[in-house]
Length: 334
Image 1 (cartoon, rainbow, N blue to C red):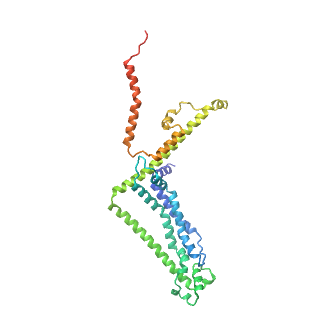
Image 2: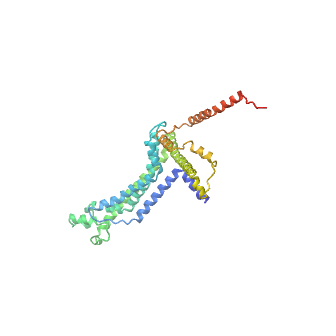
């Protein structure tokens, strides 16, 4: 259990590992979906291309949208892009970095689907069997144009009566599968070369800008998580206070049923500190609105100075009281 807890905490703290794992699962899921999918071409001239290209490109669009939905940083990036500037300026370099990382992860599963379909060849054979030049094949020499289109449309259907004894069906199928596999391997090679160049040429560019964009993109994600956790903790304590207030108002009825209430002083000071003086619905709404429209600037020293001034103001009455007591000592009756 401890090992699983450590693994869960690691993935919870490292959002990049979680997103990479989700991308890998989507890619494996796309391969599994394609292998378990029963591909059956309609073998009709007017529907073959629509069916073949639809199977090749519609599932990648669905997988791409699923990758965007499952990626938590996509929502964080949109919120950062659309939020008002307020007291914190927006850095477009950070937004571009977040957008590029989101798109790269979301494109993994669609690209895997397209490459797998091209290497298999069924979709391209179904889509472009009617576009093959019949003069390149001997079996379509003494056939009319309409019959040629019907025969070419039935090339993917090996069990059809018209194509069962036709020697050119296998030739057309091999021809289209060859082009499909060549296109699939070419796309895979281009992607590998692009990834290789991007990895090895990155040190040639300005690393400071990349480090800054990566750092602040991680900061925005972590800040949003901590804010949500703090809001959940405040909501829990706020609900606890409201429920206790309700039970205090119903104390007489509760005593009749022999229920015991917690002491008034139990954990009151700690909860009041965590509530930070926000004990009203309007105050909570104002706080959330201020967080959205006027996020605090990225300067911790200002927060320390503000906290120091508050402490000084709170300590002033105490010093006055002590000074007055020292100035006018109390007299005791003998």
